[in-house]
Image (cartoon, rainbow over all chains, first blue to last red; front, side, top):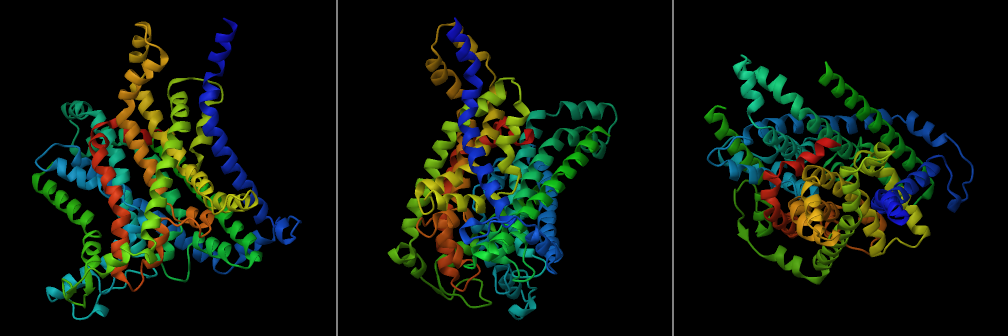
Length: 290
Length: 267
């Protein structure tokens, strides 16, 4: 009887242990080493003293604010547009109509496709000699590629944002769609009998139901884009770069003395990301209770 | 909802989804394609010949990518499934802390961690090894497995399992005949997520693989935005094919089982 009791007691810890062990060992291990290097502690190249110099260097760098702004702008607009479009499409796809099954399937297609494939496709679509420019030239709206606006390697990061939109709209949309389908039409019909208009039904009935899903997924999307490296490197301008590109370029440099700065940039990036997301979540909670 | 609005939305979805895929399909069979022709002047299979040649390393990348994604997914199931069940069905002290620890890699940018782990892995000789790359892929994969499956477990509940146990089924029988069939659609979707997360990794494989583990994203990367559109398109299509095949399998459960995608709302 005593043994059975012990097994019961150990059950939950045993179920959790493998995941917790792997994630905390890797995650905390990596974080501690990264933090140490950002503080200038790098025994491999003879740096044994802790210093805040690299943080000061990064924060006082003339390009820092510009890079931060570019990083934030891309992540913010990608997330905002993705979320709005996702909710709009989810509202349409929740109903059953001729072609709704096909549309839902098509809507899912970008979900499994890697970001790099999306980026490659967007490039071939929107460069100055891309498919869209060719279509416009065919119908006579365009004479030469230079008449087409620069959308790749541009300062506004249009191609980067388009790539993220293509990938993230279905992700957020499918989560919202799942919630909408599980709710059913009862609440809305009740609201309608009580005299609520279409806009009121959306804002006061559906919105509170889908808001947790919207907040969670937009947090995931923002955090992912804010720290991602590949797409801004491939489709963005060389200057000003985003913070992750700055960090990784420094990190990959053969000169090991640039590594503490790379780590400092990444840690500043992480802290800013967490502050923004905590503030956003607070705001969303406040909006629900208000 | 107004009918014409609905049709407009359907057309937008179909056109927008296909738009970046169609030029890749055309380019992969292109030899010469000058502006402003809508279709290539000279078609050709040179890009595909390059893809199938040994020097392109596409074959090697494909095999490595598949192996990594499969092993990472199996590992994520093995460690993530019990954790998801514990979080969904048991109350215990420190639960919110545990939940937070397991979800942290989804929300906290991995950039510091990846670079820090790179240094650790150099010390423990894990860079350039399959094991090292798999371990780093596990960091984003395990949390997604737990996130999706804890939603599925919570939705499935324990009523059916309790009935089976009362009727004399062993715990193994209960799992195999009652629990597994119930959670299978969710498990397939969660496994698809982990497979695709591993499948799409670039930076982590690049750093930890140290040039010795070549995967498809590493092969494709240098071609994007470059001059050789045909090769970029053909490699890209090889990279996308398994992902689309996976979707066809799970598309239905993705659309009909609300607990699966709805799980993301619990974060």
